[in-house]
Image 1 (spheres, helix red, strand yellow):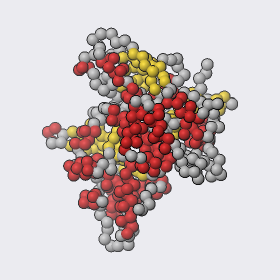
Image 2 (tube, chains in turn brown, purple; image 1 turned 180 degrees about the horizontal axis):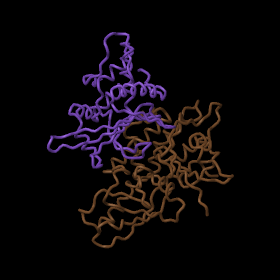
Image 3 (tube, helix red, strand yellow; image 1 turned 30 degrees about the vertical axis):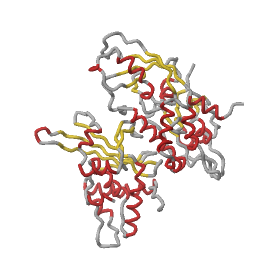
Image 4 (cartoon, one colour; image 1 turned 90 degrees about the vertical axis):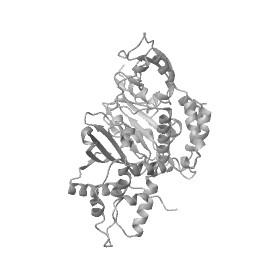
Length: 275
Length: 195
């Protein structure tokens, strides 16, 4: 019988086979071969693509290189979104490998945040964790931690160390015995077809009568158009980490087991494939 | 230790409404954007900087959004040259008054980072909200003690705004404190920023 803890490992070690190709208009001294890499779903593009950068820079002149950025089918990829989220939202129903184009010039200032160093990624990651704990525990748990605990969370993610990360993160998954869950659930719902980047609202995991709210309850409340059907036909897939959890799943359980390392549930709504 | 003064959504709306009313009175250009789920104050400002010979016009945009996660307002801003080229954080930082630079470096209650605007999805600079509660709590406590009426938005914006080139005319403070019990009006001035 699978333990709930196995879910945590499966989520952490999820990978997406990716093929990186240099943008054809980049100036190269010789032909640039594509570069293949298994990307961790729970990490961030600029954190795990040093080898990609080195590979392509080998065939370019220094003066033709400025900040690296990635694009999929014309859409600049937001490095500050977890890789798994980007894939689920933009490419989950296309054939593998995921084909990403690499750019070294014409950085799209209006679309992408700059990522000058690893410190930027760390700051962003910690900022998300703090916001998640503000929602779950009024920031009490994360503020009580020492700086070295915060560092351990970041190092665990950066170095792909599941045990190191969860030794600290488990504290962020606890709640007082008298409550049935967190104060509010940290979540963001993404839909590529909408104007706004995501939906995020205050939502409690437990109803007034003590019943646990489900994923379906959440969607009905904050994004009802996502789950309505046209003549009983399912319009959309509700995807987290490449799977569609049952709508009856308690939100509290999802938050504890299917959150990304930043402690948020990043949920994608994508059109139901028609094949 | 005093209870943290979280700003509730309803209160945020009320304070913004009073703020907008005054803005309209003096033609200050703030707008209220209220869509189904979001609360946002917006202002568009052009400023000429630099010596006359090499002067540039820089367009600043300021957005005040309500953060449900932290229960505080958050200031989002960006600046661009007229040709659309955005200013880098360094260029914006260079435009911050020396006084505030020193203050910010000493007490980073307002770290500025680049983040995605949650409604527009575009890169903006943001003053990090997690310390807002601390300084607003003491401000609100003190004003209660002295029986002064203050507007949360006006007070908050007058503290964090100048750090990023946003200066509110003093008339906001006078307008907000119209219901004072005392005859002397509370004035927001530069020296008060050390609260």
